[in-house]
Image 1 (cartoon, rainbow, N blue to C red):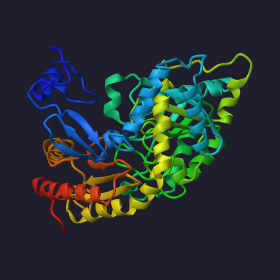
Image 2 (cartoon, rainbow, N blue to C red):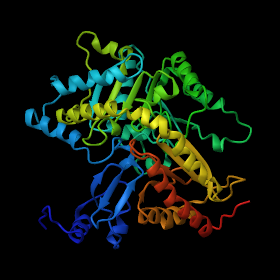
Image 3 (tube, rainbow, N blue to C red):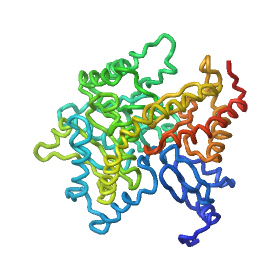
Image 4 (cartoon, rainbow, N blue to C red):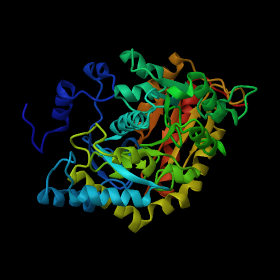
Length: 461
């Protein structure tokens, strides 16, 4: 079937079911007649579907559209660049927008993170960083260093190297055996800290695992400032400072995976700045262009770059579209919006009200915990607030996919109901959101969570 700008909603449904293979989607549901949610337009904090229904984008289109939808000025920057130079590679060449963007990113990144390697997205950024660490150690005469320390339930991407670091068994299992080297330690979910354990042991677990693996075999530590999978796990005070000490002691590269947590999501350019630590590498994507064009980056310190500046050495890695001139122009325009509208300050100003709204839902029996930072928050759902008893896998299916996800969407809110760990609802609105949007979020979540409590037979004290 040919398509035009006037393709009807019904025709789009038919074409989607026949041809579009969606990501992380149970395609059988659509084959059986479920309607594909087709989003056709966006403006500010809102999007509209093919049937004309309006939704508050409470997830920033998967933590991406930080400046909001419909910014014609940012889109125009890409169009203007395409007229001037649609594409040229960064493989042994350069072009002005990639140079300018690299310099701009370096000026905003903390410390001596001055070297920027562009990719097409987040998984590619993480994959690049893991390869970079291995070659870095080899160039320094430490060729046995290849293992990576990551956290349980953490998500670091979908490529085979990224899956080695990813700590979610269900994502790893279909592709095993994976490349060797992935080593996992407890995450920072202090809400479920095992009885008898102390918060300070969370960082020490990294040192213990390095010792167990043999420090001469460990290449990198990769952690998110606030861990996404599992529901916005915030680090306890002093955690990152201790991890930095551990990385230095064992000569291990510290990677701050900020595919989500950079570009204002936590109220700072980078999550490392929010929590006051200095990584050796930052991986980023999503908000670098607010998703108006696909782009990611690895931001490395001068120390990591130094071995690659010697003689005939090169980083034997590349991605065709990394640093694409159109994407780079869009990124520069996106960052200009941040600066002109002071979006980081906006997030810091309104974060308390956003969090207070979510905390107000704690009176609903099914709400066990509220946690997060900036515009990156989660609600954990429980069977019993006092004991913190969680739901079984079957119960989570009934709760999240049998009711919550569809009902929240039906009521005009896009968020994420997820059970890669314990079941959570995640909220991550565009950084331009404010009290009006917070009220809308509450007006949807409160009645839905109250009904979920009744359906799952969860009762208050």
